[in-house]
Image 1: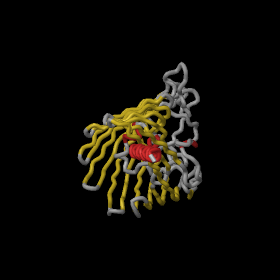
Image 2: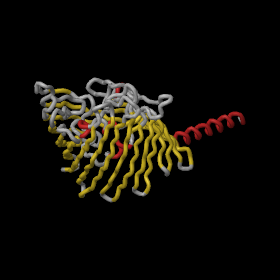
Image 3: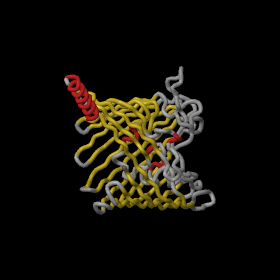
Image 4: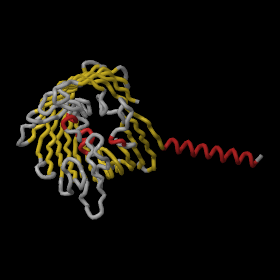
Length: 365
């Protein structure tokens, strides 16, 4: 009888320990499925139009992710994020076919901030989250600079902290991009080369402040090239630098956001460029369920006629907290011989303007 009571006590203690362990850790599965159809004019040099289902994004890129935390005591937590992008039109994996191409990191966090190791979004990505009202929409500033909505770094150490309204952060990458030329903004620069401490390295930093109804953020981003890298970045002495200044303010429920991205590339011969990308947008809730977003952006390429102006409007109707339908209208004007397509990942004839219409559905889980 005594032995039976002891066995019951051990089983109860084990169950209590297991329950306690479960209470201290959690894992969440989440995601977005977002797709639609798009029509664009002047999709080639002959001026032909095209109907298609886009792969890269609709109003948001589709994804599935796993995130978790474990309470280590004393206010310290372990955490991880694994996030995979995919194309709903074909089911193909995004980010050049990577299993967890959007994010793949593990780290620690407490009241002093969070420290992350692995593939992660960097400070350029975070700097525009609150100010770019269109976000990664199919028609948006990501069409002009594909890096902005895809600003991630492989092999990176990252830090992010929030202190009384101030946000500070930084990343350092030993090899910024292990993907080949496939995928959005992929540049084939894995780095981590013995004897070359600059090869494919990247440094980003952020400083921001959010007050009552307004905020401002600035970021710095410099990446280095190496042999075989894309976009003329074929030497570790080549650099691609972006400095951003972004801000927003609220007028009741209306958000007005804008900013500038100053970019300077120092690449192979005759490929050095200086440019400024300006954007200004407004997000206006017409009702609880209906939201109108609009944005104008302009790329000013120094000493070149290849400037670009993009105008976009999007109307979103929220059927529920998780499901929405939307329509978007966009127009891009290409100066000189510029060939920036209106739709991310799309095509346009050199020097041709382009009109596009998109409609789709988004579900989050």
